[in-house]
Length: 346
Image 1: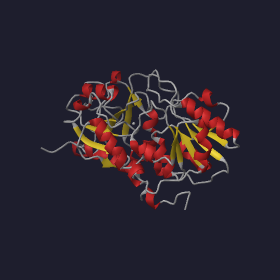
Image 2: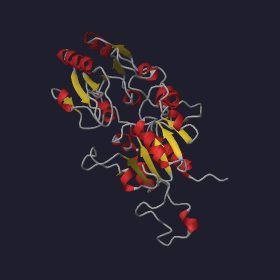
Image 3: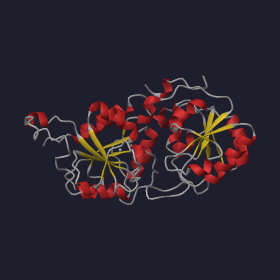
Image 4: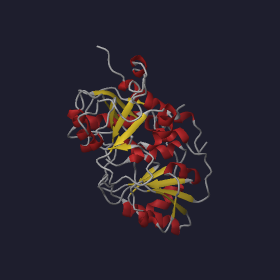
C-alpha cells in the first residue's frame, strides 16, 4: 500500500567485525550441524550519523524481535546511552561480530566503523534520517564496498545517493515509522509544533530556526490555538515548557492536530503521511533537501505569517515520491539487509 491510497484528513569498530561469536548465537558451538548454522539469523551492526542516536533504530525493534535477529547499534562508548535504552548497543571495545555492517551515511562515525571493519565485512547504506545531496568527504571510502543502498522514498533516495556520491540503484523500502500510522482524531484548534535541535551535542548537530519557531508558537497561542509540542529526541524540553509537550512521538501526536508547523526535517513526510498538513519555518542558514520543503503547505520566515499559514494549510496533491510506500516498511528493510548479509557465491 502506498500513501496515495490512504485517505488524507482532507478528503539501528573493531577489526574483527566479521568474526563469529556474539553471545547466544553460536549455533555450531551449541551442537547444531554446520549446514543448519549456515541458515542462522544474520548478525547485523548499525552505525548511524548520530553516534548515540538510537532513536533511528528503535522503529525496527518489533520486526527484529519477531524474526529473532541479532541487530545492535555501534556506539563509541556507553557515556550517552540512557538508562533503560531498548536498542541493543555495542562498542568497538566489545569486539563485536557481524555478517553485515549498516551505515546510515558517510559521516565520520559510520566511516570510522566501516574502516575498522575492513573490506571483508559486507557493507550496506540505509537512509534513516535526511542528509543533503552534497557528496560527503568520506563517501569515496564506501563506493566499491556497498552491497545495498536503501531509502524511505524515491525523493530521499535521490538526496542520499548524492550524499554517498553514488550512481547505484537505491532500493525504496518506505519508513518503518509509518508502519503504524495513528488514527486521526483532530482536536479543534490544536497545532502540533515540530521542533528540531537547538544546541549541538556529542551525538549530532543543530538546525537553525528555533527562535522563529518559538515566536510562531507564541503567536499561535495568542490567537487562541492550542500548542502541542512534538520534541525532537535531542531537543531541550525546557525551551518548550510553557506548552503541552506530547508524551508520545511526534508522529503519534499528530493524530490530535489539525495542522503541524516546524523546522523541516525527517519527520515532515511522516506527518504528511498521517494526513496532517505541515508548515515549514525556514531560516536563511537552514539547508535541507528540496523534497522536505516540497512537502510543506507553505514556508514562513516571520512569526507574523504563522497564523494565516496554519489556517490555510493543505496537503500536497501527491505524496508518494516523498513518503514512499506505507505499511510493511520495517519488513522490507530487514529483508534487504538479510539478503545483503548472505555470503556471495564465487
